[in-house]
Length: 218
Image (cartoon, rainbow, N blue to C red):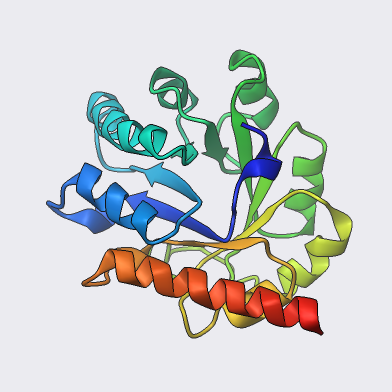
């Protein structure tokens, strides 16, 4: 899948640590019904086997709806479930290696927190940037430097790659993130803790589209 074909507006992250006993397939269906254009599965707590089985369940749903699936950290699992891509941090498997061992078939996402990391990513064959941490966040709390919206302002003029902002983003604070030039927002807790996930996803989409319309008009 070409990254230009993806609607990055709502990059929904299904994090194992946030879903409790909820059914993965049902949750994925709800997120897609709410309008998410791309989904990432993040699992820092399960065994490789459990991660694979759970990713496969999500993949069956995303494939049915033609929504790209990104696997966090694990190139092997991304390839095993035939996901569209993998998201890798600065200390994960090098982006160039991930691209090589996947024969160039995986979309490669890179986490970027500052200009130095951005330049490092630009030297590698990455396809999109996950940029943050924008605001304080529940999913990562220790040793995380808050980059703020200014990191989006810094990076937007420097690249044409899709920029997905991440970190503590919710319906009340996403407007300046989109105005700064982010193509979309990645959300975990603001989505998964909602009583009605589908309605929350839809609210995100409506707010993001509204801000983008305002930008075009201005």
